[in-house]
Image 1 (cartoon, rainbow, N blue to C red):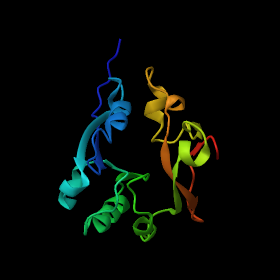
Image 2: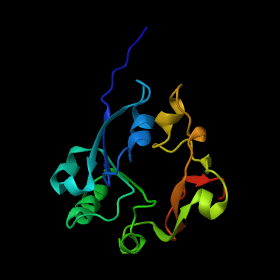
Image 3: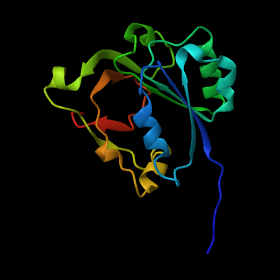
Image 4: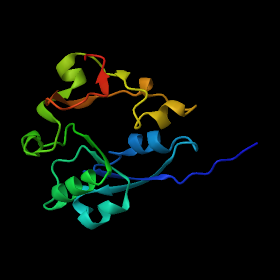
Length: 171
């Protein structure tokens, strides 16, 4: 038999520091040994623009806004090939994020699924299983995205050059 060792992808999750805010995200990314992620979590108020280059992927997990200097540094790193994900829900300051030039969407409103849509939660019903961000999750034997539940999100409209890779059950 053959064993293939590979380096784990260095991934930084930045959140607003609320208790257990990134717990489920961390669990999803580290729940199975075959998942190729080495995850570090940091609070946005402890974020240092200099440390961002130490990671191959940065996830901004529902933070209000970025500290001064960080947005520009992220743009530089993204241009150099760093992967970046932005999840915006109840903590996000939508007007501030709409001012971020490189954001590929326009944020419309915050949605709390039970209150605003009359359902307990939403699920992802379609996503590009071949997109490089989803491939490791698709190959996992212990995790499926179809079982994830979303209770709050920011409704958005894509800009002309944006590509949608995942959608909730309501489209």
